[in-house]
Image (tube, rainbow, N blue to C red; front, side):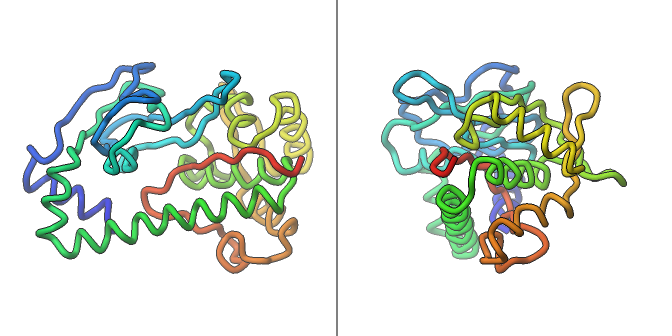
Length: 246
């Protein structure tokens, strides 16, 4: 896997990626910045957000230990999003020029990076499919499933989402209003798809929520051929969607 190989490269040559501490609430980079780097999370949790023309914030993705993010910075040009630490975090900064030098001399890492980018494209295709085939309630279910599988801690009763994600965050990810997210969560609790835990954490009933999502799509393969479990690529983002079907 690309992320594993990248970590191996850092261990063999620590100067390849500079370690940086990011306090909670601080930005790694901001929308519009010229930042020719990508990043790896060593400790903590970060999110990427963007804003609409009217100033509404949208949560794009959440990154935890071992994740790579900001790879579009390697292309040059201004940043299209802001990356913020959700808790005190430690990251590695990888300079574009240095990274490309390593890719030229490491065919295996080069191929793994290509596969990594292809997995990101696949994830985007899945997100677009959700936008045009699912209503907002089912998009929320699919989003919770992704978040649970990426950030959740397995318990006998389900996947506990450790991250504190607000209803406003979920509304921005799904493309609906906060009030509708609250209504949908109420429906999910009544159907025993999710449960609200003390402290605002969510517990995901993964089998039931997967069945709920796949029933909506009729097994058409939006999550990998109608399998019982959505495919989550290594180092994958938790991506947002902006509502088309309501």
